[in-house]
Image 1 (cartoon, one colour):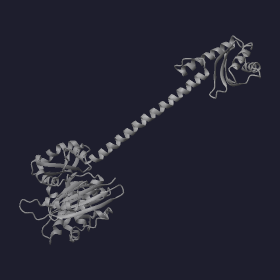
Image 2 (cartoon, helix red, strand yellow):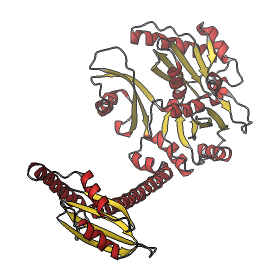
Image 3 (tube, one colour):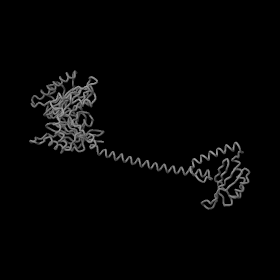
Image 4 (cartoon, helix red, strand yellow):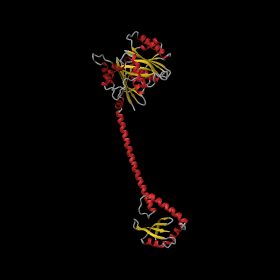
Amino acid sequence: MSRKVLGIDIRRESVSAVLVKTSLRENLIDAHAHIPLPEAEEGENSFKAALNMLRNEIDPSGCECVVSISADHFSFRILQVPFKDAKKIRMVLPFELEPTVPYPIDDLEIDYIDLESAGPDDHSEIIAVAVPRTELIPYIKSLAELKIDPEMVTVGGLPSAMCLASQADPGEDRMVLEIGNASSSLFIVSGGRLQLIRSFMTPAAADNRAGILGAFVQRTLAAYDELSQTEFNPLDIVVTGAGLNGAGLDNDVAKVLNIPINRLNFADRLNIEMDSENTKPWNAPLMDNALALALMAIEGIKGLNFHKDQFAAKKLFIKHKKKWIKTGILAAAVLVLFFVSAVMESYTLNRRLDRLDQQITGVYKATFPEAKRIVDPHREMQVNVQEAKKSVVSQSTVGPHIRSIDILNSISQRIPDSIKVDVTRMVISPETVIISGTTDDFESPNDIKSKLEQVEFFKKVTISSTNLDRSGNEVRFVLKVEL
């Protein structure tokens, strides 16, 4: 099942956006745009105007939206807290940060990244990040006016560092330098995890910009080595950002630092292709962070989020409302089909039971034709069989044993050849013999009865029934002989 994720990277001078269409097979860049903020007159919101222009190029409806804003809005602190539990860390963060930030703590939105560094088992080292609500809310409101409710609002440049860290080997040391026109950020990645964030103003003087950036990176590396008590040896510095656009600044910084510098270019690194309908040229320094934003959401990479709505459950319901309704309808249909299937199966089983009951009753009537009232044929047959067994035992121990062959011989000898008779069924029990058959007229059963009464071990012969068969040409009869 495919979905669309829109990453919007908001800077003080521009807005960049990348729409990624993701499926189980691949990620495709469906659309992208870079909108410089127009010069605003007094009282005009240039950011909102840029968003309106962005909507004309990329339709955000039906997309998951993630947003980053310039890192210079945020304050970063490395803290150590005596807890491992995330809930306890969040409870004490405001008290730990309060002495170190120049804002009232109640006016801040706070989040943190767990460094998971080697240390005491009962302590956590974290990067605590705070942003004043007065700087965050205008972005949220402007997005809301355009019906964009982001799933996440995070620090500009951080998605690029987080995605790169997720791709790094556990032992790799990397640096990500995000150079903007107004501000820049430096991210240190060690052991496959983010370890340090620094934000600073981009030098305005173009002729000495590389030297100032290089000096800032050197000071940061020296401070990090002292802080971590380790020697940090990055393989290279990965650079991106609008400040690189059309400039050889990265080569100049490499000369200052004497460290290899490579451009990020996430689309090439991860082999993410353009959709065939997206024909706009791709400018990696301008688009890297917006693409990393979308990939961060797609891959489920955890980072900082300063838009954790207290009505998150309601947002989740609204977001997936159509899917849940479809799922509910399918579930109801499955339940209805299951109920109908159960009813039909019950009806079929009842029909089979009725047929079996009829067959049992038929067998019982044929075996015991003298039975008049039948309530439970199975139980009554069991009783009669038990009585028959007792009679056999009684006869074998008390009375003489009459062989079936002798009975058949006597019947055969006594019925004269002149009587046309066809014996269809004979049941011989220890006490009785039931003879069923057909003959040519109603007198023949009486003649057969009188002849059989002459057999010495036949105590009594009774005609149980005589009637015409369906053809009307023969007479069916049943004789009962008591031995």
